Amino acid sequence: MHVLLVEDDEPVAESLRRGLKRYGFEVDWVTTGAAALAHSGPYDVVLLDLGLPDTDGLDVCKALRERGDVPIIVISARSDETDRVVGLELGADDYVSKPFGVREVIARIRAVMRRVRRRTADEGTTGGADRYGTRLTVDRKAARVHVDGAEIALAPKEYDLLSFLTEEPGALMSREQIMEAVWDANWFGPTKTLDVHVAALRRKFAGVVAIEAVRGVGFRLEIVGGTAPTGPSGPGGPSGPGGPAGPTS
Ligand code: CA
Image (tube, rainbow, N blue to C red; front, top):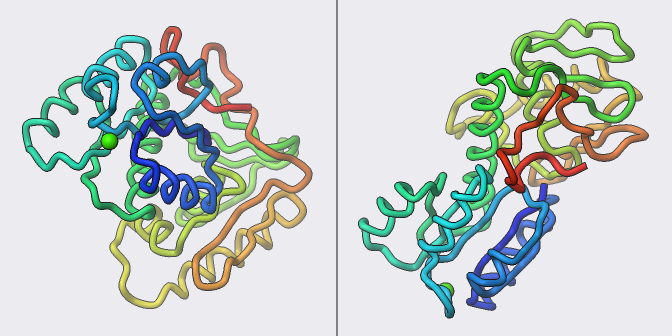
């Protein structure tokens, strides 16, 4: 997943960039509103600071929104509620206040991307299953998974877990993020149930996906013999007109 980071504060941008990279995100960093608007993409989400040296971030937000429907997450040191409201009214999808942790930002990005995918699926514009590598397809509308054209029988939570982990192949997902997304819980207890479900997926998708455990953090799913998803196979795509959104290939 590609992130356009618009932030003039170097220490903040650097730590954000390092943190995002660690979790498998690609980051393009620009320091001005003009550079953000001149960036040709593609990118999947914009992290936008409001206090920029050349222009008000809110104007950048508005201009980006007029061009397309790429998700925008506003980051700001301004604690003013008005900014938050105006930002959201101008089309920002979410808002984080400084200071923030990288994990919080990642959680927001993933939540926004899930909402976008759901919206796209509801509109029926994806028109089919998402393909991963040459063998695996995940049809998020029908909640069905196929390997080499044959449907794989999955328990509901096995499907939810696979669907979540394949959202970004190669990305490191923390246990907390997985528990929150798949089990709908702020999970404070043991996460043994997660390991049980991971084991089941490893068994059912042996040779198709690899789910690597990252000690003390969580899991990373890789497509065996393949890289990025080729994206929705239907006509059109999730991008708005002229918008830079949508899966990169
Ligand atoms: Ca700033």
